[in-house]
Length: 323
Length: 268
Image 1 (tube, helix red, strand yellow):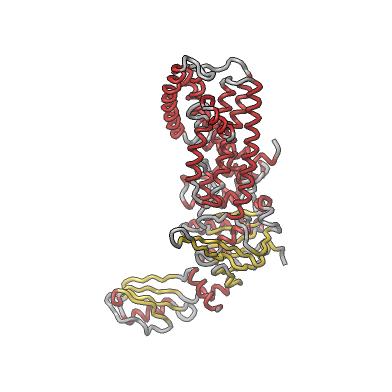
Image 2: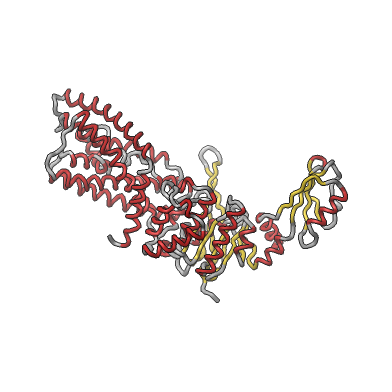
């Protein structure tokens, strides 16, 4: 068994919410964002941490690196106490907050890297070598002299990842790293992270709403719901659940009665007197092609879309199946 | 330099570079400062003349020196209470600061001092030049006021940055700190001697001012630089400044530790 890079026991965080009730009084409600989370992540693992918005993912991450103080429970990251040894831990961990920037907005990207190298007290030669490596792999050479605020989202995310990885941390935590990126940019970023893991043996923990991230990058997933661990296990196990239902939306040439009799599908709803209909089907029980053929036999199809199940949906299903 | 301090030195330089990207904003600031400088000239010169040419040790020349130095320091001594750190708490970007192997307080203050020092060139120097060339002002001809004045100015600038940081930590509890900031803006300028030199205050008000850190931010450096006070008094003022700086930094440290326990990162 590899050493644990992350180990939590009963990790809990409450937030107090105050809402106005009457002229002077305020109601005080305690919201439990993370509820007795016990997980272990070993060195070299790549773990996807998924859950709906507000499920407690970001709160967990912030406790892992010592930004937030836990209400209860224990946490060790890289063998350190994130609260007492926050600064020491910061040398071991790189964090990318997809929606926040660690670049200096008014300064060229190159200078942000130089400042971060100084903050991490990297030797000059080492810093230069690492920067060159990151610039090459993340294809940043074109915009090193551009100030942070002028970068496109795709450029900025690459620079953010580079900024978090400049000190070659043992553990890389990515909070929504591909949010808002186009398909190509996502692909590039994933390829980079895979290579980084291969070369440096980096441990990865990432939260995402993107199934592609999980499929490409993670060999284990943790699903959290309302702060509780709802599922933990292999990707295959998740994939079976994920594969369960896709949604086919068809626009028909003319209104038709609800298509409730298409084999191995579930009718979800109709709009415009049945001009647009939505059917859910299990990808393991049937195929999109045969569902389409069945629908085509009943009405003329003008347009269609197939939706992959989103993570919220998967989480909901996993959560329900456990009750 | 000790290795521990290198990150802060680099952050100071980052502040210098950041400030120098705001050229147009600095020009705007200079124009505003100069305008109010002429307003102060009109009022305070009239006051000195009405008093018969000297007033509590000020004549026209030394009053002019006070006016143009105080206006010139406005870009560097933070008297409006606005800080990047307060904004970072409000938006939750403070999470990034806490994920770095440096003290958020040290990082914020180092950067702000860098910005302040960089503003001395484009805002401080022209302001003094206006005073010398357009209005005329008297500056000391001996070395002492400058030898003690420069460190005094450095401490004054750092003190204002440290105090504004401590003020921003209120955001750990309040989130929105605009009220605290406005209160600071009203009180600090007045007690720092921005509008009227503290020497012209009635005794009880001057005593009140000296119980606050504000004179150490602006009035003391100006008094020392313009040679209004003796070498002995200058050294004493510098000592007082250092004590206020130490107290303010300590307060910021304690508030950061306490605030961290209540921190809720805004915006997920």
